[in-house]
Length: 114
Length: 115
Image (tube, rainbow over all chains, first blue to last red; front, side, top):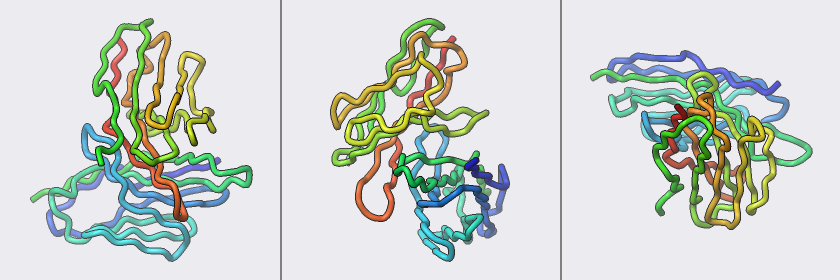
């Protein structure tokens, strides 16, 4: 069964304190791994797509990496405005055709204190 | 670009009533997705359309739920009759074609409360 597990569930950081969020996945074949950011009361906002092990993507203070079994979202010197829930999702590969289905983890809620 | 538009943003209804949620995808996107988000189950895909045709509805919980996409710029998700356990945030997302992978862009959601 395809599955995505994110850890920790919640993370509190001081401004400037770097850390990493983990996304472990079990999938028969991976088309892509996605990271989204979700602010309270809003829809998820796309951050990154990773396709293959070893790939890295960066955006401002965020860097996403991918291995064959997990992805990390590294946050360098975070600011209070980085506070949000970060969601990881995988799209499984299907020989029968791409259904577009994303399987989401439960998310990590990040709070950055000034 | 206005992004994905959903209406209403909030809906409060009584058990047994019909609820219709609406979505306008981003212009030029050919895929549309309906998701439901709850604290217990997280974000779950309900149904996926490609070029207005339903492709995967395996996530639709039961016959009380139905979705349509009559044209490329409009989709509805209907619940009839509604039940308290349907209370959740419902998101619509549309997909940008091309490239190695299709990225899904989410709307602001409809917060549904069934009393």
